[in-house]
Length: 263
Image (cartoon, rainbow, N blue to C red):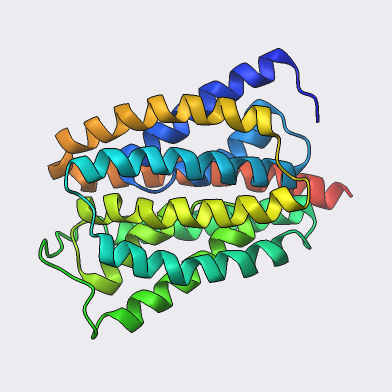
């Protein structure tokens, strides 16, 4: 697929926005990547947008993970268990996602965004337990949440951080800031698994992905630094971000719903 120079420039800008969001709140960058690819950059094939964004988000998440690891905000055991279960789910989800019509996939994606926004608002005041660990008692719960998050991640071609962060909090009881850092282990793994599946089917624009990644690395660095400064205000950040999710979801429902009914 050949894009115009302006579209590639918008891809660079979009990558910066996604990276900043990933670094700031751990999740949500990926849920914005697909609509940015489709409605701002102008990628006409939703499956290409999904495959390309999955690769870019995985790379951006890896950059964010390095920054959070440096700040000691990562529970590696929890992240590894969550990611291992989620990669299996992501592979299965990506296979089914490619079978669904592109506009229907975007419509379903928007509905999931609305659900996630509600869940984020619901859990924004939970302080968490800084000493939480993934012991034998909690491991089955972590595996279950990881597998479920992976299915959604693969199906919609997203990193899944917006599901992983509340999933980690619910399954381990860790604070939101540690969940943000730890979630990036799984976001990276989920994104790579989904991107590999879509790339195998020819649904990745490598040039656009490269620009998205470059913008995302810069954005992630800035977002992570800001997250460290505003760690005590995560509730406010979550509220603002949930509002952004609602707005984007409403726009996607309007656009994809109109296309579905017009057809």
